Image 1 (tube, rainbow over the protein chains, first blue to last red):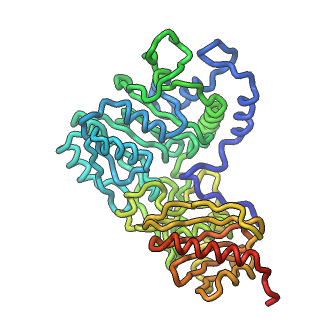
Image 2 (tube, rainbow over the protein chains, first blue to last red):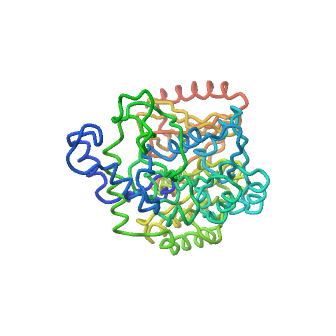
Length: 377
Length: 102
């Protein structure tokens, strides 16, 4: 059987940046100096990571970048660290469970008033409704995914966030699907807080991620513990980013992320470069008789669809185990958007491309889908 | 052939149960045919690895890929525990029985 064709990059990217595995291994096998704790020779991969991320997000001071094990941890630290008691939080039906579940938990505990703005049929938030809710409810925090992980639709962040600021709120962008894929300038987009993960389009290892905090915004630590500095204090020291990073960091993994970030700096690439492959895929799916959840305007290389007479889970199993096409099926951890897309109860089959996919991958995936749709049984 | 692991696949939206039964040997066509006795069988023999899905009268659905080591069983919400008990008893019996020449 030929090697698998990987079309599940919105879940986690594969392959990773060249040299990533060797870099992580090298750090795992090297003497574990504790950077910033006991003095050390050489380069601190955490510092390098922060500097490269600050450049990627045009966010200035690298100490405002907090490193975590992923977007979920980042979002939880942010939600629990902001003074949100009794405040309104605005978000959307397009969000991932990494946003929805922590917010539901805070709502259930009676700490916040949660308002979720519906989506349109392409998976973008309904702009008029967003504007109305911001005007009327004046949320303390607005949380928005940069792009849907189900439909690929990219949000007009600048416009939506500008109004939040005008009404006295702060903004949080979930860039899990777009960091490494779309240009992100936190000042231009009006982003006060930004959560990201390292293992998707940043091409880094799973277990890496982080968030950006605009100067002037203070978060109370969700986790506290050893910091390696100011050990005489009974509370976390005030300095960023250590204040929000207790415990021993995953140095080897962040060395891997630092390498990935450098590789991407040297090999710049944006989602638009995949438009041709995406168009081929979309036309082929429509031609084969699939129901495609089409998106106009700016998008990421994510395509959701269903196949007539096929349960999505069955189709996913066949594509993966019989044809070697690795994809994702179901709700994709974003349960609310499917109602607006018209994809309930089963969700969709999702293909998500990366810079490493080639035309032959698309052709083979389409061949497999033709066979699924036209095979007698 | 023996069952070596039973794993819950996911919580279904409607309260149903989905379990994966992993075996110490590959799923072959005679085993699939015996599993499908008296039930509707959707079978796709021309896929690179053939796919099958069995629909039982009691609502149980079983699917798998020939040549793989597991099958997936979907137990509907109503009476899922009873259907599961019956299926597992039947499966154990089937695994202990040698297939006939036909």
